[in-house]
Length: 481
Image (cartoon, rainbow, N blue to C red; front, side, top):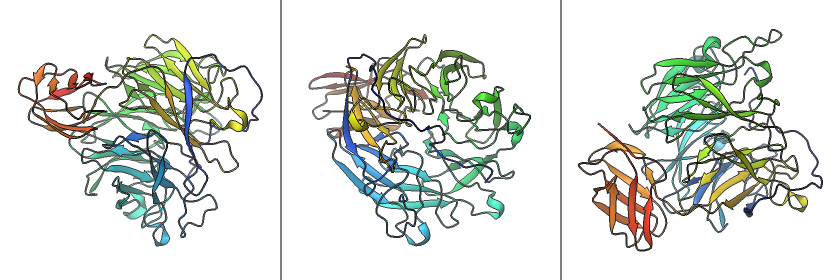
């Protein structure tokens, strides 16, 4: 491989010092701390399951006897909103790590209630895997990369997956492919993989971040290097932003030109207004990174430049909350130099909500590298990569006063399609409507409803009437033809 791939390349050595903490009304609660045996270094976002619990991965740690790495080979875990943590799988549990090792990305919840993810290495060829894991912890390796000559199918997937409306999953590999610079791929739930695109220098090198599924049904992503030659000494390129259709038609939308910002572009988020929002881990007015907006055709506008006091070097995507504002993390900067949680409006007003290492010994965590998750109870959940000698890390929650909502899975579908609605206290619900059109539904559990997109439904908000009041979906449900 041409470079060392790691989710922690931006973390810098720092010492926690006494400092004035940014004033805020928010309270952060540390739900769990990793200790190596139960995982270490969670660098990916959490996902809420059908049962209301949270699921995630740690890049290192675990107790597999087959793992020869001193820091462990990684885990899949679940944690209740109250903080009870359970290890579901220790990677490298099989001989020669055929089940994979080092899951650097998070999980995606599929419509069948199981989770899908990737590992950076391990598998039959040692070049990474795609796996499925049930909430009970049963893991199936769906695909081992480098199954083709010269790794034409790709190798070393750093990023996670996204499930499209056709049921297939889409992702990227950081290396392999026709030119050795990575691939974009599709894989079915049963493990049939199709390479959609092989990256080469002109259209980008090494896509390290996940793909974003847009309202149009197409996918958007970024590359670590390639594109324009912006560094005459190394000729590595500054990275690109691209669009790819589910069928594999590829378009380069934007080529970065500033050598101070080479690589490390966070995944894009498409907001409910159709605009894309993204972050760079460098550049901006102060070279500490920026938040930008992007049109579907690739026109970028800076929304906010970080100045270190309000955070530095963002590397996780934003999340749009139920109030319409955006929330994110930075792994560095803030009052104590150990990272921040922030809120930013669509017009660019940024508020620092929390600065990490605010507690003695950094017991509240440090270096948050992952995106936040807004649970259906309205609370945000996240992880920190850690501040102990082996980067143990934490899981935390933070409330900003937002109320509960419901979430649809998927977020689009045709009339007659059965979908899943996730939420809290759904038992006894009396009505489900799609922008006013009444739907047939079944309450499966206190946190899950299945509903059929009704005749007459149009694109809009899904509303569930529960015994305690009406809950609206946090995103628009798009009715497709």
